[in-house]
Length: 251
Image 1 (spheres, rainbow, N blue to C red):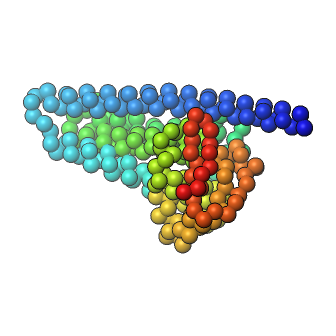
Image 2 (tube, helix red, strand yellow; image 1 turned 90 degrees about the horizontal axis):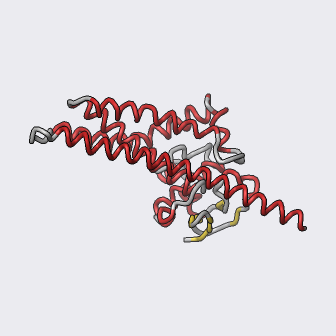
Image 3 (spheres, rainbow, N blue to C red; image 1 turned 120 degrees about the horizontal axis):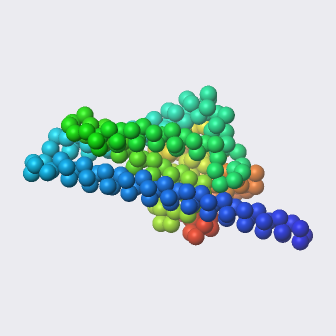
């Protein structure tokens, strides 16, 4: 019994250390990307208005592409998740569907891959003037915003790789988290493959009732996949994350 308790304590200590390591990496990358994006937006629009005339068309184009790219990334991620990650790139994505060993997984490479075009578009739009550079700048900004939101909801809220505070209390994000759990349970052939529109995908395949009334795993961390326990519930399970602790609640 003492040996078993010691193993449990060692595992909890290791998990806390891994989450702390990932949290440091996430915070550093988030602060770096956010600060650069904010500075780029500020200086770019400052340069645009140096002559006293606001380039309305270019500004509207930048804003429109920011919103469009952020929304479009959800559909790109859905397609790539189904057609690439669960197909030819499964050898990399499989690490996300298996118990995690260490603070990182091979699947994290996809975040770096998606960051490359965003940085390229932002850089081109920052160092050039005109409508086309403005559109490129907006697209890069939209991709960046989507990536940040994806990290907090997917990595933080769903898989508990770091605490997300009040984000865990947003009702729609709780539905998104529950939908993504169903993807990992593979009840509808992997659907939903998207994240933020996951509940809509489930509705399209007739799985909305499953989101509301099916047994939902209490564990959301892939590392705990081998120790999951399910229980019937009459509503979706909420995972509240506070100071690194995950507290399942019903709502």
